[in-house]
Length: 157
Image (tube, rainbow, N blue to C red; front, side, top):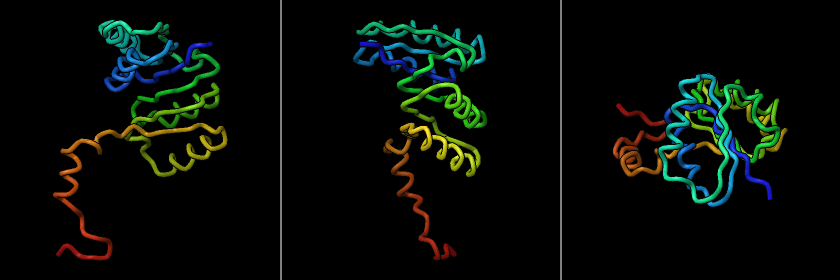
């Protein structure tokens, strides 16, 4: 059985947290990390090695370019900034065969980006999720209830 190939693209704080979380996965995996910044890649290496060793074998590679990734990826996690996310997704899907995709929020900055990327995802049959965990925290759901907006068509005056 071949190892599951997972790419984590973008090694800011969120990308590093995804990388660290992968140490807990319940099977052997091949992780490929991408960030154009050498210092971000170095921080990623440190964050990964500071974790408790994984229970199952893992192979981790660090790259500065998307074209260095394996041609086939079971999962890609896009944790870049929103301003480059659209271009990153387009380039990744043009260069590689990706089965599943996780996008960090804020997903895109412009409404047309959603339409354009959605079309490509459908054409390539890529299952995609958006990671937006804040909505599950009690503080945020309580805030929503506390500051409930008026229904459409009504005035708050």
